[in-house]
Length: 250
Image (cartoon, rainbow, N blue to C red):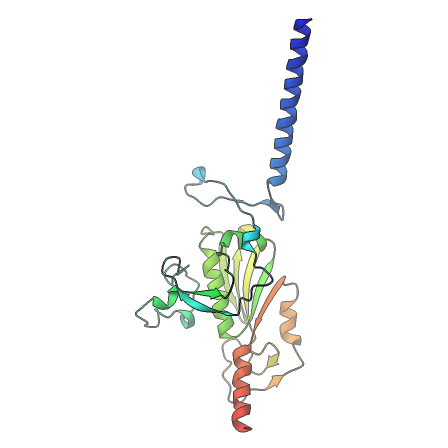
């Protein structure tokens, strides 16, 4: 009788262990996030046989609350966490956006951080952004100011991608950075007025008098189709035109 009780107890314990192991395996399988058929464990350390796995996921700390007005704030000095990249560390900066390459001797301008009033911006994590962009296209559309934003984004992201798994192409009026493993692209499209104008040429856009077609984006719009995220910027050009009008018609 005692032996039968012992056997039953062992069976009960073994069954419980199987249930625990099975549940743990199920949870781990569900927790192994996948994006576009690709696990988001990233392997970046060298050599390849010693690469360590890192699970990348976005949390509530990475989100900005609806009450946070990011446009209201001030620039604060931060020489501990900034700059997030340098001209030497990023090969994709154009001459137009490379201050030191053009003769600026100091780097103090790189150590200012934007601080919104009443809230904090989450720290930028390039791996999390790449996961969000997996299988998608992000396009910046606008003028040279927007090109600068595009190049900054590329510089912040490219540092975590190994050589051979990223590429950069210039196909006027577009510039395209690709993260091969993620099947993701960050792109720029030259359209200074967003709408069509006679200064839309990617390199030869200096004209004496600009003509703008306010109700047409037909030509540019064809190149924007199929893009998952569009970021527009044309503020500076319209303010320039407004200032001219105010000068002529006070």
